[in-house]
Length: 134
Image (cartoon, rainbow, N blue to C red; front, side, top):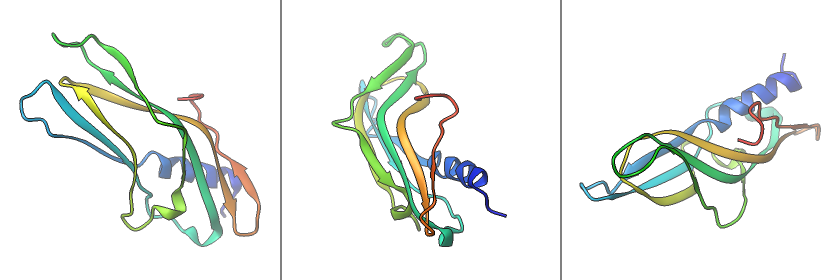
């Protein structure tokens, strides 16, 4: 049976499916990071909206000779809200395109300020991010 709790767990799994990669790495000192959001298959016949608002992106760079280790915050022009229902069947939405110094990046964190799922019967469930605001 699909309950609100199971629905929220499933929505978290949907949200964490990202397509990202580095392009333009031609032995230069910079590369381009592109992060796109997409949705995974799910029985959407009960869901009307599945929205998430992202207010920040952070990447973790490992120690190297050119950059120090730690998180780098990548600026977003403004908070971005996505309806995951619009990102089905291979459709993606660009979250950020950023130039980064060459190096090894081993984590990406999204700062999620809010999110919810609204069912077709108008019941709504808030998204809870277990790790807080990141």
